[in-house]
Image (tube, rainbow, N blue to C red; front, side):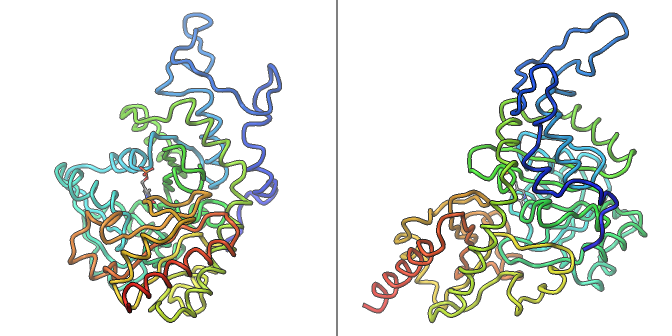
Length: 394
Ligand SMILES: *Cc1c(COP(=O)(O)O)cnc(C)c1O
């Protein structure tokens, strides 16, 4: 891990638990209030309380934005109405004729935004394994303006060396954008490793309860922060006061949730690795994972998401039918365990050719492990696989 230049800060667990709790001087409210207001009275001509109109800046949202900027070691934070709204706001910094390099095995919605929308505005993208240096060099063009990285990716959990790639990008004048949804600042802080911009689907771990849709952006540096403030306000896909409050409430428990997610995922992958019906398990905490060392170098822990391949695709349908505690649903990062079939759900928008190239095939399941008791989770999945086996083998 790179050392932070702000080592005199309280530990991250303390900063998370205290989000907003010392920010309301009038009543001392420990839970920061929801300021349900869009307009703010000016004391007199030429004066402002700092708040004018809620799209530009809003009190509850500001506490959240300051918190995420601080947690990610950035300079400014921006809360958006979804992770996709955050990505769209960031991508609006690019112009017609610009080219982007993008991680293979990207979140399907981001791929769709780039290919179906940004492309119509003349912004083109090339998908490469961002940990393959030769591939990066081979695909960079004179008009390459940005690199978009997910590490780990989902569902295949590919790892990119952030320090290496961000410093390479910096030398070439390319803006590096990291989607940090899967690890959160509790386990990984890309800006400390050289990234310019961090994006989150806060719908996932930061919110953590499958009940609020939100996105966050953090920028490093004055120029980028001012540019993003302009885009955030101009585009207007901002987070509401109520959802800002819900998200902060979720974030207060991020540390203990991430620790339990990591523990459960580790136990679950150990169980699956030894299972006769399982072909392979994709989880960076496993010493056999190709990105294991880089992951350990740049992150202080592992996510609660992993994927596994069954030996036989016929198992998929009955397993999804027989799981009871684990829900068959397409999100991740919440306290409840969810299982997804990427080939037909999250990754359906990615062409078969690219999906096959990265390995998202019809035998792959993704599991977002919740914070339930590990014994119950293992029993549920073990039982579903056994019932599937009985159906198939008769
Ligand atoms: C879910 C997700 C998104 C999109 O976020 P929404 O909040 O659903 O709009 C972007 N990136 C990653 C990695 C995600 O998991």
